[in-house]
Length: 251
Length: 295
Image 1: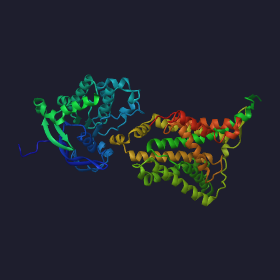
Image 2: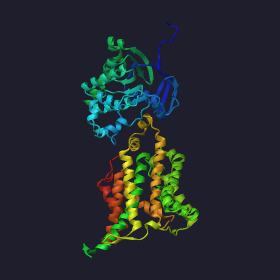
Image 3: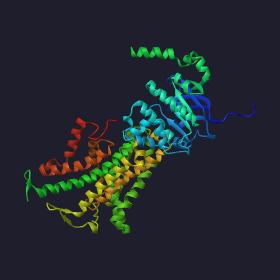
Image 4: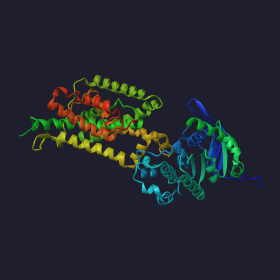
């Protein structure tokens, strides 16, 4: 004990830098995710959470540093190659295609690994998707679109899931359903990196949390800490400030 | 024989048939343009030149190699499509990150160069391309005699248009294409090699133009300026149908061919401008085109 490294890291990010055109969005992030873990990136709007996911996925092409995924350096790979290694991405805007039916959306991403969920399993987990399989993807409700976006990735067999704010703008009952899905996936052995602003939701599903600010990781919290000491995370997220700003903009 | 609106039926039907034949070419060409525009966001001004190239490749195959119409119908689109793939790979691709206007200017330049090259080699006057033996002669439709080859043009164009539509709307490959048209970044993040998809799509659009060119060779003369003549009308057709709308391209292609034919019967003086008149009206009333969605 102690000498041997006991962790089994699926993802190890070191000194990750990335830019959108001229503006730098990530300034040397370092963090890691173990196999089978659910880890969240918490932080304010514009802190660099979404950019981190996009950089991991290879969508942000100008990136620097090191991303070890499943023991393989992927910093120089295009996103289509990264996807084939088993990284699945559910974007914040859900990315449901309006010119495709629900069924076409579901089977669009190619299966990249064995052990993928079968359509039957997916329909059991997400019964609504089967009922609406002939509808246009964008005719679904927000919650159904989120479910479809997740189901779509599960069918590919990706074993590392990047979920960008899956609960954003959804009703509490749907948020509960999504929490259940994430727990079910974890139970199946999936590893999940979750971006969230809703830390209460995050604390119901995650093992650990990283706090992102200005394109860097500024703190790391175990889930117990967040539950025992919510003020700390509230101050990180600037929830008070955010709240007042929202009120001001609505008023 | 009877009359319709004071016109002999034969005259009316004859013009409608000509309208449908022109419409076949409009539909094939605007369909290729629509596919290319949808995925690449490039207005392919070289489309007319690629159509001309299709006709010339068929003509060269016949005159230099003795390869006839039927093989040319397959070979010319493959050859010209391959040229298109090289164009996309080495030139057009470099312009995706800048304004659409640059892609338009590049393809316009390529069109002028190709046209100039062929004008230099073959002059303005057209080369004759014989109708294939199997499609010579006339067929009696009861109300008119239709040259068999022209009937073939209508049927084959319609079939190719419907096949293309089917591939894009109903197959997995088409689903990739539609999805990549909406959000190429995300489709790529799902593991699809989108740059290759784009290259092949451009090649397919160009091959459609070349196919139209081979079909046109026995009807019109094979001439360096044949593309420049038709492409302006085809752009009007695309605008009327709705930029990027495949169904719009097909329907507007055949429909405007008919409108042109009818105008030739009732008010011949307007027949060459009627499509542009329709375009102006459509643009005023529904700027995104009859089948288009605002984008």
